[in-house]
Length: 103
Image (cartoon, rainbow, N blue to C red):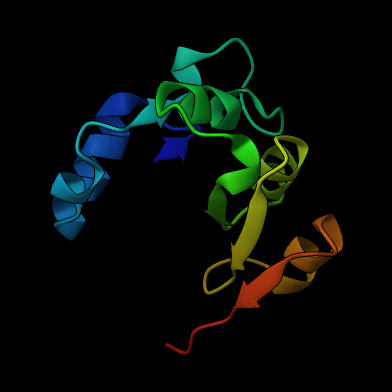
């Protein structure tokens, strides 16, 4: 999990959704790096910490800065557009696959 949010916020949201245990301590915040999204730093940091080549990483993003960051990191980007502008996400990255879920 790589986010522009603080570690505290990431953990709180994952606890609320019952998903915290799925990440086994692999939580990375923009607070861990010099520059937040749209810079790729948090994604590159997460890949390095997990000893994984960025090209083998997949990112699910709901924001244009996040899409830009993941793309700049050389990662495959999947857009989640339920609560954001799908057209803006698609315009940010031509390889973007949009998951538009009904309410």
